[in-house]
Image (cartoon, rainbow, N blue to C red):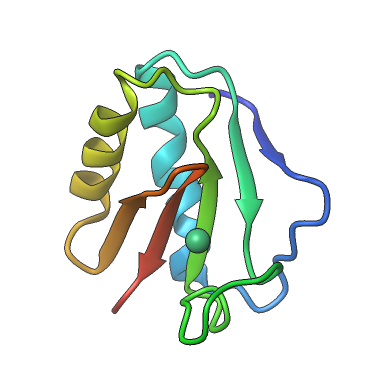
Length: 102
Ligand SMILES: [Zn+2]
């Protein structure tokens, strides 16, 4: 099991179990692709657009800068497949955004 870290200032209060489950499902995928650490970079904290799933606790951001550019799309795809159609996994410029849509 790879280490799971929280970026300083990440707020988890109000996160749904569905959003937190993303971490459990993502960790072995990160490990499979040789990423050494899984870092949560945002939960219910921070500035997100109106209507963002972060406001309802259904959104979570994962660090992507430690992931090789060539591997990143594969990881995004693998995570989407593992989470299924209730979730949306989006590769943003600075992170991977995941939201639970129910
Ligand atoms: Zn996000």
